[in-house]
Structure formats: C-alpha cells, structure tokens
Amino acid sequence: MRKNSLNTLRRRALAAGALLLAAGFAVPAHAADLLDTVKARGTLRIAMEGTYPPFNYKDKKTGQLTGYDVEVARLLAARMGLKPEFISTEWSAILAGLGAGKYDVIVAQVGITPKREATFDFSVPYTYSIPQLVVRNNDTTTYKTLADLKGKKVGVGQGTVFEQQLKAAPPGIDIKSYPATPETLQDLAFGRIDAALQDSLIVNYLVKTSHLPLRGAARLGDISRMGIPFQKGNPKFKAALDKAIEDARADGSLKQLSMKWFGTDASRPAE
Image (cartoon, rainbow, N blue to C red; front, side):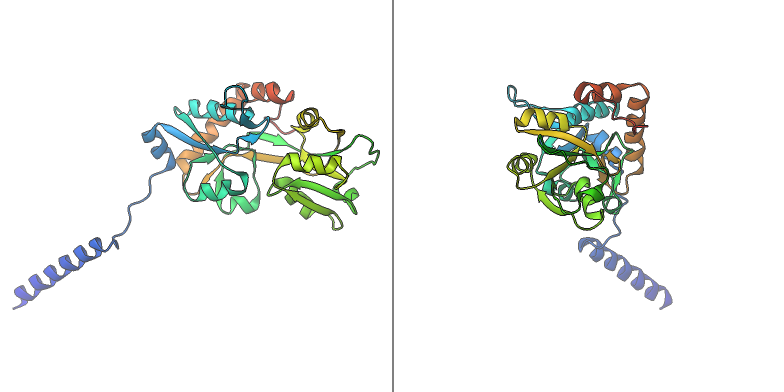
C-alpha cells in the first residue's frame, strides 16, 4: 500500500507540474542581458527625434538622419560590433517607447536625472552642457542667476532638463513649456515671452537659422549630463556601452565630433 500510495503521489505531482506549465505558471528563465540580445541580432535599435538639429535631424537633400547624435550613435555601435538601426519618434513619447521595448537605447541628448534613473539605467555621460538664455536683440537686461528671471515669462522645451531646472529655481518665474523649439523662438521674437532657456551647444545655431531678431545671452543653471538610457537589469550591456564611450573619449573621437558640430569640446565638463 505504501509503495502504491507513493507512486500515486508521484503521478499527481507530475500531473500538477504539467498543468502549471500548460497554464504558463512555470518559473521564467532569467532574461538575457541586452548585450547578448543585440549581439545575436547584430543590430542596435536606436531612438531619436530626428527633428532636433544639429543633434539629430533629416538632411533635406538625402532625407537621411544626420547630426551629432547620429554620428555618436554610429561610432558607439561600431565599437560594440553592431550595426545601428535608427528609429524616429516624438520626444514626448520617447522614454515610454524605451520602457515598452520598442528600441534598445535612446541617443538624443537625454539628461541624466534622479527621476529618470529611477526608471532606466544610463551610460556614463557622453555630452556635457549648460543652459543658456536666448533674448531679443534689443533686450539689455542683465541676468546672472536663474533667480534674476523672477517676474519674467521664460520659454523652455517641454520635458527637458532645462524645464526641470526652471521649476526647481526660486519661485516667481512664469514658465511657458513648448513642444518644439521653433514655437518658443517665434513667441520670443513677437514678445509673448521675455526669454527662452536652451542648450548652450545649439544657441548659436538656433539664432542663426531662425532668422529672427534674437541673440544668445547669459549661461545660467547647472551643468547637464547627457547619457544613453536603456532598460534596467543589463549590467553586461552597460559595461560594454560605457567602455565604448570612455574609449572614444580617451582617443579624442568624441571631442572630434563635438568640435565638428559645435566648435567646442562637449565630451568633458567645462573647467
């Protein structure tokens, strides 16, 4: 009886295990590190807006993506032995898309902030920047700190690190958030806002190409560190990506690209 009972228990246990497997309740295998996934695929899926010159935008003649971020992404992918696959998406949805697994990384001047680090892992910074004001040509106001903007209407990109810095500044600044830079500059030129806070790396470019009566003014706020976000839990991928960035920094490749697009070395924090 004992032997038959034991056999019965074994059969029941096996049957129960089969039912669990069929129902999808089996313990999942450990997810592969992203490095293993991209190596097996041979490509690195890279998201960017494609509408943010000179960082990433479509060339009017060829229709192909170009810009600083595009060249950085190509450089890093090559150093990791991968082919870059670019995916254009709106900035407002770019982080949500990463969380949903629509692409592997974002190379689009994503500022490294504590809030974002709570959701995603980041590479080491590949670009350093500081906010800079854009004002009308006839504006002679002197600004030395963000506190000097009290009582002013200041335009800023929606969801950017510069918007976060303004919101963290002393109260009294009337912050106007915009989905796109051209709208910000037009409102500034027409006097709807008093100033705009932008990335110092592109202020000269924006002023030159907007053909509006604007100029770059004071650099205010904290240095921003721009990194490459990806989903958490991929230590091998992070190590490989960080190595690619640090090697490119050490041999001057990042500096060369920065000088090409901005005329300054943004691969290291300004001293």
